[in-house]
Length: 250
Image (cartoon, rainbow, N blue to C red; front, side, top):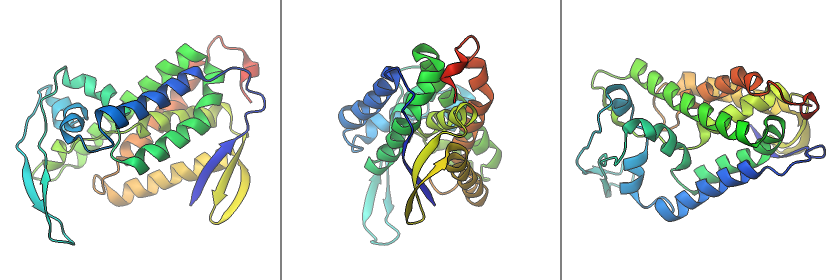
């Protein structure tokens, strides 16, 4: 497996203000609104629920008690909460929430490493729009995938999804198009080394494809969102560079 640590920023001449703001919003939402992942009521109100997206209806479900498969301990799982806005807006709100500390740490690390140079290439406003568009497309990809592979009981349509992974996958897609040969410092197996971006991101994308095919809609990770966001980034990034100075791409 490959794990990125940093990339080459020597030619970046602008401060990635939007990237800083995106990271700050994600952290603030996780700490103060999700209360470090303990505020299930908030999380279940603003996550993307596939059934709500395909029907346009806000769905509420009762809390339920489940038994932990290992410890046998009874756990209270909150039901879907009322969403005090259009359910379609959860396609955006969900991309600023996370399921735990490891989840947000990994996402923000990737955004910190790859977002700054992409923002430099696109410009602040275009980067912000690009990020949000890729995130929405990623969420829709997850919804479509869930609908296509839902079991007979359709229960997977009621499982909420959340996280910045889809939007960040779009950032990676844009990055590999505009900066394919930029050096990225990674931990590869057990070694610290530098590789071109197309190697680092290419291995990551291959892992998403393989994991997505193996797990389908199961496993708790929305691989379809990662794949959809990445493809959206690859396809759309050139559109967002129209009129930009070519010297920003390397």
